[in-house]
Every structure is written in C-alpha cells, then in structure tokens.
Length: 138
Ligand code: CMP
Picture 1 (cartoon, helix red, strand yellow):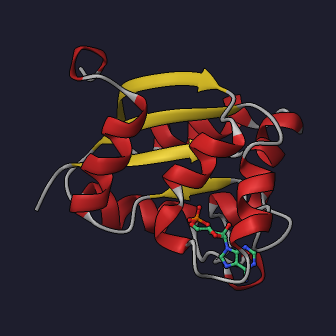
Picture 2 (cartoon, rainbow, N blue to C red):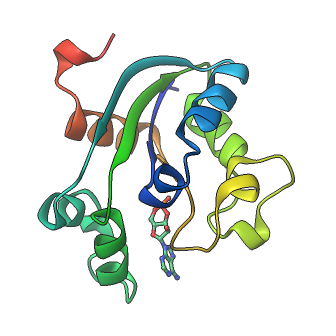
C-alpha cells in the first residue's frame, strides 16, 4: 500500500475562495503536502487527465468545467493515503457525502464537486506525475 495520493481543488471551489480552507482541512487531517501548484488546465490537458472517462456521457461537460478556471494540484502523504483522502472528501455526489467532508461542505453538484481524489495507488502516481516532475515531489 502506497502512502501518497493526488488531489485537485477544482475551479468551482477555487472561484468561491475555498482553497485555503480546503488545504487547512487537508493539513488538519494529518496529510503532509509534498507537492503543490496552482494552474489552469487547457481543454486539451483536462481531456488528457480525464481520458479514462472519454466514453462517458459527462466527459465533454467534465472537460469544459475542469478547464473553466484555475485549479490547485497537490500530492499528499499519509499512511493509507488514497483511502484516507477519499474518506475526507466524501462521496462523488455531494448529496451522498457524509457530514463534515470536503464535498459536503463545499461541493454543489456531482460535476462541480470541489475536489478530485485518486481512486487507487497506481492512479495516484500517474496523476501526480501528470502535474509534477520528480524534482517537484518532496
Ligand atoms: P472526480 O473524482 O474528479 O473524477 C471524475 C469526475 O467526473 C468526478 O469527480 C465528477 O466530478 C465527474 N462526474 C462523475 N459522474 C458525473 C456525472 N454523472 N455528471 C457529471 N460529472 C460527473
């Protein structure tokens, strides 16, 4: 089991000014931030990042939304990071997210759901490497 996961604070949470509060929750839950950057994905880059969903009906909407404004990308370290982070962010659809989770607090819909979290150790590495060179991962 790896001890790292990858996250993005999405354009909805960024434009509403929640970046600091979300990073604070991440730190307060015992994650160490080992890479961090704010950036704005082009449509092409957002499409590449979510290529695994290319056949889904919501893919176009997802790519449009994820390239609509700045995001903050980060790699986080904690024991059992992937599962622990998914607990902290809550269900993909904020209507199903548990009280106190990031999505319950800050997400407005299944599409505009405030944060991304990797779903496996393997994808955490792929997604982290998409944004950060090895020299930028501490
Ligand atoms: P994320 O964890 O970033 O991974 C894929 C994203 O696709 C997911 O969060 C949602 O924001 C988005 N998504 C999943 N299902 C739907 C849906 N039915 N409609 C719109 N977006 C969706």
